[in-house]
Image 1 (cartoon, helix red, strand yellow):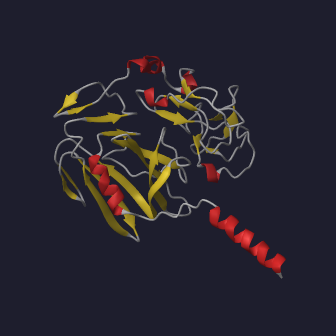
Image 2 (cartoon, one colour):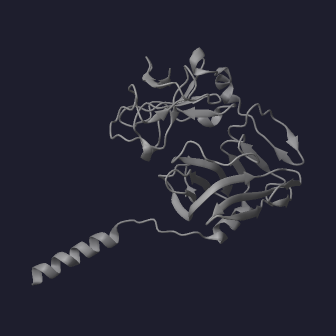
Image 3 (cartoon, rainbow, N blue to C red):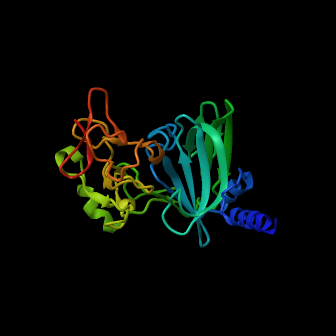
Length: 292
């Protein structure tokens, strides 16, 4: 009897010590972002324009921000069979869904659109958005919801765009965009099919970094390719993505949607990437899944 009691006691203690992320949605945590001193968008091409829907079932970083010596990342898992998930995490480095302390989590949402401008704008279905106000628009239970955060500290400081297409250094009403001179090499990057693509982050089959992640220096954006089955994703190239088109890398699916436990995802017909209708996936000489 004592042995049975001891067994269940040990089992209970072991389970209670396991780390579980059960943080629910906390609007106050989002509202605290109004103290942000910097704001770094992952992809300016989507801001004020379109919902985050592709690639499906994948974690995307929306933006990174700093409050004092603390960094926060807003990540979003795009819908597939289930609806999307929005997470705010405190990070000590690069934004990654699998790293950092979970601050707030909102599930069962879709059609996420992010708005932010330096001048007043009127948006259909939302109304007037004041300058320097960050707005998250999404649907929950088929009803539109808005999270509005006035970025009061940003007005006289900086908004840093990581991947803004064709963006040059300029100042607009106290808003500045900084250009990193160390990113000059990435300006030479072009279409993969023309052998002009420059790699900015390479991983190996053991999911180890063979090169440091320098994709934040890409002036025209970056994209992930399908090579190895890693939680942090595959290798990445500088340049706007033409994924899924002939001769270009296949569009990467989310980690949970690869459909295989193989470490090497580069093989003909691989489910880890998809192409435009009429094209199929093949593994090229660089061990990258491409469309032909």
